[in-house]
View 1 (tube, rainbow, N blue to C red):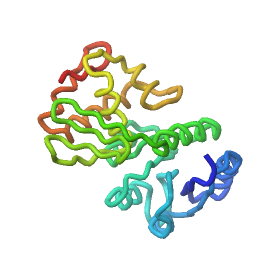
View 2: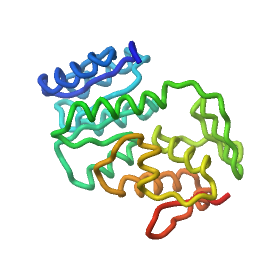
View 3: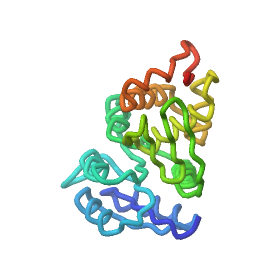
View 4: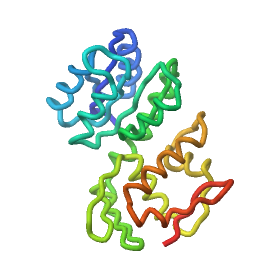
Length: 223
């Protein structure tokens, strides 16, 4: 997957170099930014950026604000890095549309694996359209409409809804959802799934009710 462009944002030059070195070895082009303000400028100057790796604690503009600025006009995948492990921080990240949330210290190899998993899914061409109970999913355009009206979903929310529709009527465990949608060995807990489902249901309005909770197991889409 050479030549895809990744923006690495961290005020620690050693951290940027570490991440950059691992990504370059995999054939990616890497841009760097040392603070939030520089990150926003670099992103809007380079509209072909495929993914952003974004630190939370930075001068001038923190990662949360950078995410808000970018999410106002772009659905580019964002992986958030943070030294904090507070549940509220993780939930805030998902609320802002962060696709992955990785706490420091982390394994660069695991980070690269997550980058590759996201980019495999966003870069592949797929012209399939899914329909279910008034929900239309255009997988190629990455667009969802409900009763003809488009809804704004983050990358991970889109993947989650697609997975539910592709497996409608089937009870899916949280572990199966993690393995299929996140596409890597997940070492956290099921809070990630519950947070995304809650947000997805909210964005779907009345249609959100078709995503049923299977108590003690996971979820099932009933159309």
